[in-house]
Image 1 (cartoon, rainbow, N blue to C red):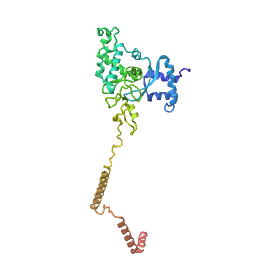
Image 2: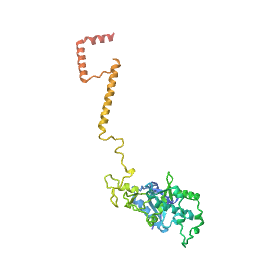
Image 3: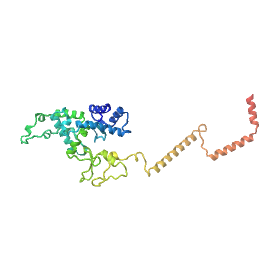
Image 4: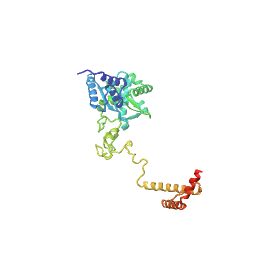
Length: 335
């Protein structure tokens, strides 16, 4: 098998140094190094990723794509295929920090419900002792916890929370809620499946932020972006795949373009009538003003018949005057 070229190395180096890249940024990088747009050269793009993954498999790494469930965007990143979380977080984090992250992870995926986020206060109050396994199982297990776990203060939690958000293991909103980050969605796919996290019936990926079937007895959950694809057509059936219950429309699915600033059928005639009345009233006011202004400024309103009659009368007067008047006029001009 041929070794990786400089183009492959450039893609890998960018992902390793910058972290996960959005679909748009990664495609732009691919276009820059290959001169081909992935949108029109999809097969070349797929072959390139396959070539990279064949070489990374020896090291138990993988170039993978995932969808960030909070914004629906696709991201690419290099992930570790070893299933334990310690190897995923690497050596940068201490034992206490890893335990804190595991506690946050469980709280987000199990206690946050469909929103997939917890408040920053709940995040700070996450307990670490539940994340440490005491091998002998003695009753005095609390006293056998590592000192770093027992002495992990609130200020250390706040600092670790900031680091996890900065490294994109977690994410935060403007309202202060904490959710999973892009790297968690990339790396923890096997963890989600191994811990019985409900999967989306459309894409079969774990549902961290998703919508549940309105039927309380149905366990079907679907990502919001999968809902848009599944029920994209107006006339498509919105029946739940599990129980056939009608799935309600989301706020951003409502089609309000048809009714915005558009009068209904019963409104249009009244609007036209009021418009005609307004034009007639304006014209009447103009005529009245012209009549009141006197002969110097008045603009008489004549019908086509009266105009023709006046023209005929003027022609008769001109013929009765005879041809002498133009002659005299011309003589005066000569003088």
